[in-house]
Amino acid sequence: MHLGALLHLPLALSRAVLAALRGRLGALCWSLAPLSLHLPLPLSLPGWRRGPVPSPSAPPAPHRQREQRDEAAPTPTSVNYHFTRQCNYKCGFCFHTAKTSFVLPLEEAKRGLEMLKEAGMEKINFSGGEPFLQDRGEFVGQLVQFCKEELKLPSVSIVSNGSLIRERWFKKYGKYLDILAISCDSFNEEVNVLIGRGQGKKNHVENLHKLRQWCREYAVAFKINSVINRFNVEEDMNEQITALNPVRWKVFQCLLIEGENSGDDALREAEKFVISDEEFEQFLDRHRDISCLVPESNQKVKLRLSCHNFILWLARKISWKLTLFLLVLG
Image 1 (cartoon, rainbow, N blue to C red):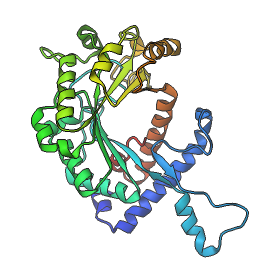
Image 2 (cartoon, rainbow, N blue to C red):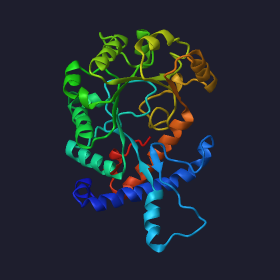
Image 3 (cartoon, one colour):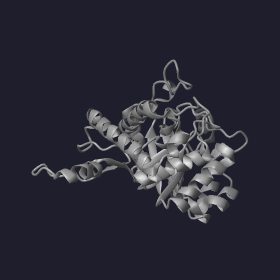
Image 4 (cartoon, helix red, strand yellow):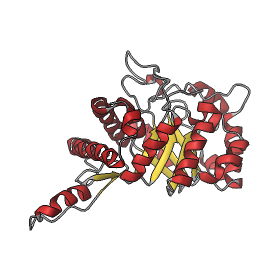
């Protein structure tokens, strides 16, 4: 079924489609349990909330069985919407590469977001690729405004490399945005160039400080995302992170994903960026006094990507474009 037709069906049918997806994803979580032994069971899909499970001591009355099944179904409370794979950077370790230029039309994207809100979405994060590349930021700006103004979501955020953001965007859309996360892997501009975050005559670090100031002026919470790799693993970022004072500093370990940044079909060759678990732990230990640091383990990322790949497979059975509303949950 074409997505355009799907989105014009009654809302009840849209709910049924999402319920079917939730059920299949719930089953997937159980199959992934061995990958996440550190998590309490039953395993929950990242970004989904499972309702209360009825006590097995007494079987429910027939008229309550369907209602209780609905209550037990996971709810997509937090959604990452990767609406584009296109990017103006070429980070050597990137595992979400530009294998397609497709971007869902704005109105169809809004209808999909409405469906997710109806299914229980509370948080939305827009990412890519580079989200500000589409229509010079107007596309993501209109989605941010829609989610805050029309859907009344309590948390609306964007992850960006920051290179294309201008103050005029903050003036127009800043009041609708709760959080802006900027990718910064090094405070050494030469290292940024080696990684693939070079901006030509522009300076990535200087731009980061400018964005931090705009976030203060327009009351947007500021976050930093860093991928720790072979070129920055020895760097001491304590002073710079403390000065920028983000609400959160999320730190990732460089990860290889077959078909994305590793293997014959990949658009990147990230092997030279890989570090060991021990080296990653040493980096974390060096920055242990930074209270806003949040490490993102490879195990957690792999679990999320496994769920993402399952959604891709399942959506091909229904309507492949539907996946663009669900990537990646968590």
